[in-house]
Image 1 (tube, rainbow over the protein chains, first blue to last red):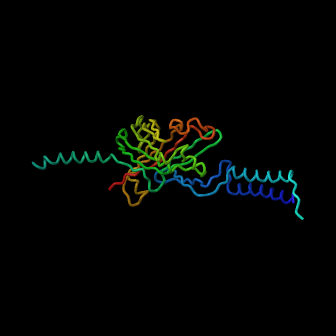
Image 2 (image 1 turned 90 degrees about the vertical axis):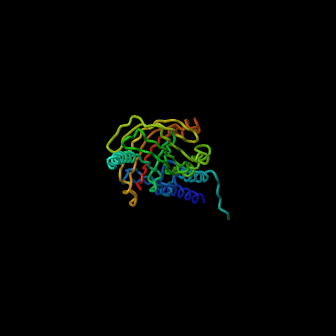
Image 3 (image 1 turned 135 degrees about the vertical axis):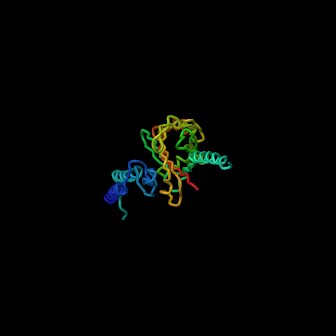
Amino acid sequence: MKMVVRAFALLLLIGTIGVWAACGGTFGWTKTSVPIREEDPVTGIEAVRYKTRLVPGVEFLALGVGGAVIIFAATLFVRITPKD
Amino acid sequence: MKIARVLPTFFFASLASVAFAEVQTFDFKDPKGVNNVTFVLDAPLESISGTASGISGTVTYDPENPEATEGKIVVDSESLHVPNPMMKDHMHGEKWLDVKKYPEISFELKELSDIQKTENGGTANATGTFTLHGVSKEITVPVKVTYLPGRLKDRMPNAEGDLLVIRSDFTIKRSDFDIQPGQNEDKVSDEIKISMAIAGAAPKS
């Protein structure tokens, strides 16, 4: 049983880091929009438009990694016995 | 005889109309949505950057006489955007900008000084009243003005007229405008770097 919980913690850890990296994770706070810069050819002004996109930040990483660590730590201290 | 009397009057009237035609009012409500103001707050623990796009206002400009430039640029406080939704809510909220109570941020030009003319505009120091969070303060900021005669049709194919581009980079302190003075400066810098690039149009009817 402990092994199953530990495997789940490992999966959570890998999954969190994987999703964070795959979505272009940032070490700042999570963003729900990203700026797209485009220069206006007549005026030379760089227009900034926002595109809706999730960029997971440190709180996402902290929640996933923290959760995995807590689950793993729990297996060290909590006795899990399967029911008969 | 009558013609001799009427001709000089016609000549001077035409001359005057040409001279006055140079003074134009540029509308900065850009239908293309290109105009923007960016802001950066670089605190030791956190860097916040965003933009404002709800820009309006008018500027009266004469390329031959830039000293006489007048105008007011207004930014809709609600249009201030940062990519983190919670941060945006806090920024718009009562504790910080209180956009419901103070829906506008504005700069009203009083005078231009140190004008350096170039071929299509020039640079100057613009002194005027900057209003933010309900607090008005006189500030002087460097501006770069680019006058683009006849270029409106390049942006709006069915319109004839001129364009005026204004750029300015300057810094203000939020504490000067009663925005949480002395609070959270490790995360929300007191200094706000503002970068403005806006284009106004003066259509000719």
